Amino acid sequence: DLPPVRTGLTAPRLGLYEIGKTLGMGAFGKVKFATHTTLGMPVAIKAMQRKRIEKQNMSAKVHREINFLRKCNHPNVIRLYEAISTPADIFLVTEFVSRGELFDHIVAARRVKEAEACRFFHQILAGVEKLHQEISMMAKQDPLFMDFTWGAGGTTSDLTLDLSKESQTKH
Image (tube, rainbow, N blue to C red; front, side):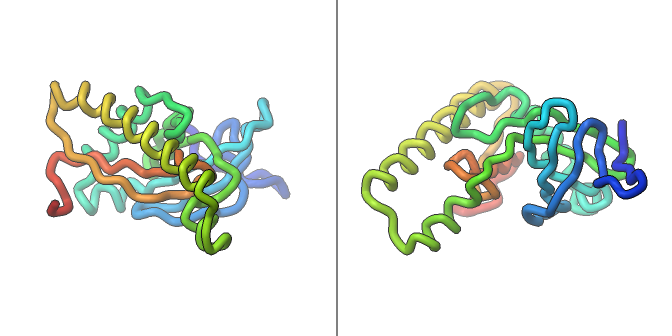
């Protein structure tokens, strides 16, 4: 349980991670770029405020997502390296994907070539297939619904998974 600390003129830290710029905002807090100080490895850290999570009665959902991401290992799904819990926050340390959001890439290019679109589509399908397999195994114990939204990332591993007890959308 290591809360972020500031020391002198150095960058803010969370345990072995030196925190950098903000990459984006989420429902419960910010996503920050960070570097593992020992390995020099870039990561993304999703900082979620416990107060926001509890206010929205989402504690069980966040816990399920963390447990799910710990089990999921696929090249097209962003990898969870560790979860750090403090009294005020939950920090998810994940793989950093340097090329940005897929949506932003497509908008900037205005159009993508067919071969590139096929590659993106293949990556999405491979990632969703893996998620489906993992969720199918979990659902045998406890039925869940899933929604996917785009998040920060560079390949199609930037899908965000929402595991819920009840479906939030009508199909």
